[in-house]
Every structure is written in C-alpha cells, then in structure tokens.
Length: 502
Image 1: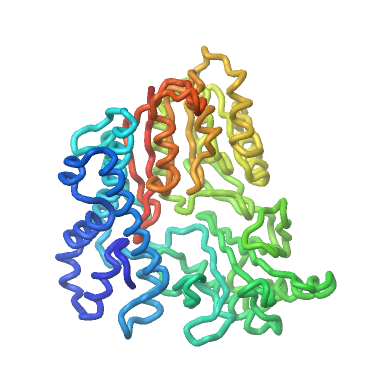
Image 2: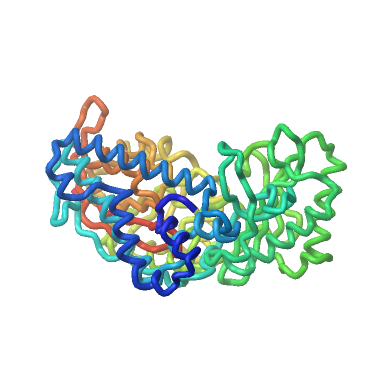
C-alpha cells in the first residue's frame, strides 16, 4: 500500500523483504519521522514564519497528506502483495507495531493537531500557546482495554472479489472514482470479532445460492447489498441486510425475506445464533428508519449492552460507541472532567442512546439529551426508565433546531455543563453559536473522532474573539486540557476529549 498513515509504505516494504525483527526496533522512530513529515512541518520552521505563511504551509502539508491517503485507498502496492495484506494495511495500518508504540504514534498525531489549533488561534489574535507550541496540556493516550476484535459494529460490502466473483462479502480496497474496487474478505482483520466474520461468511453463502444478482451500481440493477453486524458483551448478535428492491413486487419481496429468514433460522445460518435479523429495502446509499423502515424478520427488536452498571437498549441504526470497553473508560473520564455537581444540569448533545448522560445522572440535578435519530431517543427514554433514572429528558430533532430554543429561555443562575459528541461532520454553526452565547455554560467537553477535520472549525468558533457580525457575542472559551482515547487499536484514529472552559 502507498501512503503513510501509520507506516503503510515502510511496513509494506519491510514485509516484502521479510525484515520482521527490523520492524520491532525501527518501527517507532520511522513511524514518528514519517508522521512529522506528512502531517506537519517542523516546529522550528513554523515558529519562524508569519501567521499567513504558516497557514499556507500547513494547508499544503494537509493537501499532501490527503493525497497520500487517496493513493492508499486506491490500493496501490508492490507487485506480489496479497489482497489480504493490502486490506489490512489500508484499514489497520499500525497492526505491525507493538501496542505501546501504536499509542506513541497516536500521541504524536494528537500533539500535531493541538499545535495546529494553537497556530490557527494565534492568527485570530488569541494567545493560547503552552510549552511545546500546544494550545493546552495533552495527556498520554488512554489505552483500549481490548486490543483485538474490539468492534461491536461492522459494515460489510458486496462487490467483486479478487477472483472476480461479484457476490463477495467483505471490505473494499480501492475507490469507486479510481474504478479499481476489490471486495476482500475480512477473515484476517484483527479489529473485527470472530462473530462478525462468521455472519459475513454466512451472508456470502446465502447470496451465492440466490438467483438474484448483487446490487453493485444502482443503475445496473441487482438486489443484494451491504450487511451490518452488531454484537454486545451480553452475547447478543444483530444482523441488518440492505436490499435494493428495483422492480420487484411485494410478493417477490416477501419470498426473498422468507428465504433469508429460513437460511438464518433453519439453514446453515443457524450457526450465527442471531438475536435479531433485520431487512431494509433501500434505493439510497444510506437511509434512516424513517426513510425506509427496518423490517424485523426474526428474533428480538433490540439487543442490549451493559456499560458502567447500566443496561442499554440498542436499535438497528442507533449510535453506540464502537468499542464498548473503551467507551466505559471514556465515560469515566468524562465524569471526572465535567466536574458536575448536584446543582448542575448536563447538556448531552448528540446523545445517541443516552449513554454519556445516563452514566452521569446520579451526580447532577438533571440531564437534557438531544439526538436527531428518533429510534435512538426512544432507546434513551427506555434506558432511563429501565435503570430507574428519572432526572432526565430527551429531545428528538436536529441539534441546531432544538438547542437554541432550549437555551433561549434558560435561567442564568442555573449552571450548565455541555458534552458534545458529534459525527465527523462536526457541530452545526447554530449549535456552536447557541453554546457560545449561553453564559451559563462555563465548561464544555467536546468528544471528537476526527479533531483535525470539521471539528477544528468548531474549536475556532468556540475560542475566537467575539464577532457580532457572526452573532458570536458570548465570551470565548479556551482549550484547557486534551485527553486522547484509543478507541480504535491498529488504526491511526483516536477519540479526543477536549475540555473548554471560560
């Protein structure tokens, strides 16, 4: 595989030369050197440049980094490298490194992000630089309690495999734009649990028996699409199969659903011991339950998970942290960093099934959760009732519509602590503005799985000087502490908790 991202290029070359012992001794220094080269120019060079020149240089470096990532996704590699090796290098590029060295690589990555934030704030006239050019202190990366097979949710695609079979269930190497997609089975992936691989293998067996074609490109027809597998530590397994109906009538659709159910309840698929089997007819790449309902073909409508002594109900499309053990460690830290007392109201924005808020409910006066997925809100309300938690309320809707209305009538005397856990797209500007302009919020915890992306824009909006033109009239926040959590071992990604205060 080409591209850096966790040492893909050198790891591949070393593997081809059979230099496993060399990897153990050179891994960290080589990975860190490449990380610095591709993610950020040297601190000395940056500090010597004017703000605007420094910003332009950073933009060029960022563009170069994404160009390398694009090459990696397109699946280029040395002749002779197997498809399995290409996939594992693309999805889990740090897998060759000892785990402690993976953590060090991620620490350096997060350090660069905080340096970038400090530089960007300096350009706005905000002096937040701390030792090392960081915008705030950075704690070591908190390790994951589980390193292998930690994912509780996996999404498998259907496409042509290395042998050309279009009914292959696995993960992609390559890109649609590059027209070089190959679907590779995930049997060798260290981050995916055995149960997920088993369900994927059974689904592949089923669609290969089916006379219906896979749906690779919508306009070319076909029906069988992706598979989502969700599991819990309670032993529950949910499978969600997406199907493009094309021109099939209701009778033909009913036949396919019956065959699918029979395969997983009476046929070879019984080995998967599914708790829930769902079927979704979809003519779009992604769609919610409201757009196209999830149809329960077999089993229970929900699966259940236990986190920090609480029981949580999970619907097919509800958000839940992908690493359950890591989530427990993360929520304990949020509890500590929030410093929320008995008179505090906790705002849980993008709350999913309510896990963060409910885990803090016993130490605050009230929880207010906001989530766009209606089924997740239904789960959150059930979770609160089942766990005997009554000091909470959950609102369904877009945060940018719900939050400003809630805060507009807030009494200034009641302290608020906000926790936000948005998707990679970050928070809507109206959400940031509502938080910024609410004087009762003095403490904000921002949880981001991609802090170098759209979240960076949110950080700047929260901390920039007041700007009446943008309706940012509230006192600016300041980054106070950063704590990275390794929720995704073997990958380059981290979950960063950034504490802002004012």
